[in-house]
Image 1 (tube, helix red, strand yellow):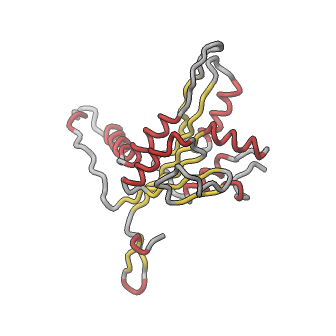
Image 2: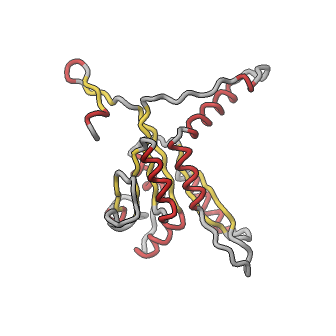
Image 3: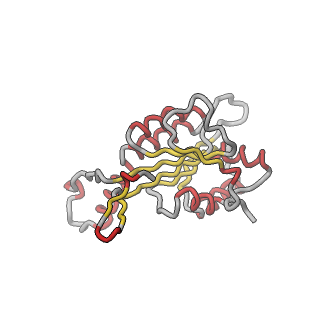
Length: 210
């Protein structure tokens, strides 16, 4: 943490200047491929807790593909993902015999940019206003939300493909502190810009299932 993030008060008391907002974006396909190579299974609740440093995330999403036909085992797994505190974003694979490349990269990139602009915070505040509004009130009169200037946004992207690299870079240009978490030290690889911190999950001893 840089000194610019803290304010010195009386009697040597230090106060954090900026309110921190955390966004967690997990590429479920990349996470699954990586853990299969290690022949281990991640405890998603522990992973979320470790990557958010105990801060309630403004947005925490898990992106994955599901079969074109309903699969009870798949939906059971996605229920477990939600119980870990993650919102599930899915896209169906094409039917058998249809050759079409499908990925979640666009969804992740779009959500990263929206987080960088503070759009998730605005949506949440508007929803709260609507929920607490008197039914007789005209909801359309709700004023636009103004995002605090003192907010420090931190985005952690887990196991992304390189197709998301530009969105990460743009978030960094917006002033978002960006972290990339994956299995293996590839932070020195070319092609990644705007990453403030690299996290090698393979060295963690707390994220695995017992």
